[in-house]
Picture (cartoon, rainbow, N blue to C red):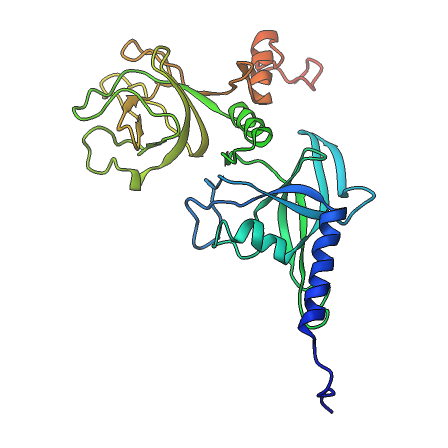
Length: 328
């Protein structure tokens, strides 16, 4: 049979329970920063965006439900170094979220998967993997909080401009460590194209197309990257967020023409010739290597291994069979 018609959910009791939720989280919780993700070029099929950015941060109080320690697998030593795999859950009052976030950004009506949580107490940055909106389940017929399940954020060359120095400076340094330096050659010399790139712009290459070729347009780019820095004196172009492969100019075989490749700036309209695979007097430039721009050291272990091989002659390339003990 139906409920007793004389007993109904009381709005005053609902308001009281909501006030208690807000007060408890505000008293026992911690200040964190909610950092929404901005999708700049979303793939409509896979729902991904390789060039997403974080441009704002909202200070808000949340309750860390795991009071003893972070969950997850913790700190794991792997072949690529220490991998931090912490997990946690945070509870935030719905009313607080609406006041601190939604009122300032009407597009965010609830915490979203993919957004970040910065926890200043531990200096941790977490990515939201799931948001539970029905916990606890309809007390007095209402919902009062969100539970955010998070895990350690894995940086992938995203741009950070939140206005929070601890966050922006940290990831700007990480972005530079993962940057690539390309020492370019001559200006293409094509009328209408400039010589210098802009910081922050997108540069691109259309394989085998350059100059006034009608198909050398951004929409047909085979490789793109973001300019971190440009040195007009040394002709060093520092880029990050590289998508695709920037091909070098190919040195011609006797009788063939030089197969020129360039890098063009989408905003600056600058165009310079890519370096040649082998030395050539026409264009004295070096093909790019992945370099730590903070310490000026080679960034990949493979480059260091190659250098050691060349220096110490570690690998014997002669025709002898090393397992035959001299007899074949």
